[in-house]
Length: 120
Image (tube, rainbow, N blue to C red; front, side, top):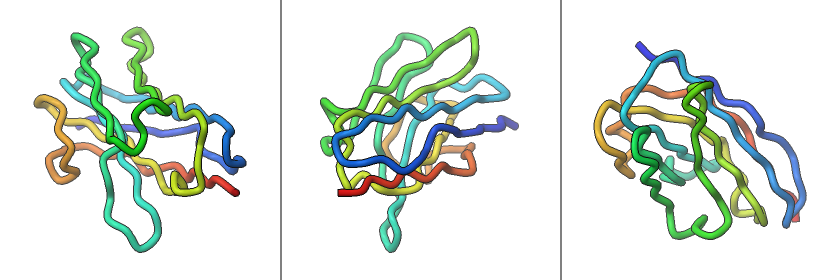
């Protein structure tokens, strides 16, 4: 069992930046960030292959968000720049034993989520 704990959410204005963190209690092959806005389905944001540094992004965040990892701390990050009101959502950290995928139901472990609110 892998425990995931997110942190770093908050209330910011459009154009601001935030960095989310996801600390894990164990190792998995892939980790990802998903988000869910009120009344919407959970959507893929970004993913990283833990060994090899391959990264993947949703088109809506490409060029603005950067996913990264710190092996020593076993922690994943999501640097979010130029935030927009449509980025407002609960952001979830997820992990799975296989390669990174964009479908939420393929992930085995989930964090509790952290709220990101972007005001216009």
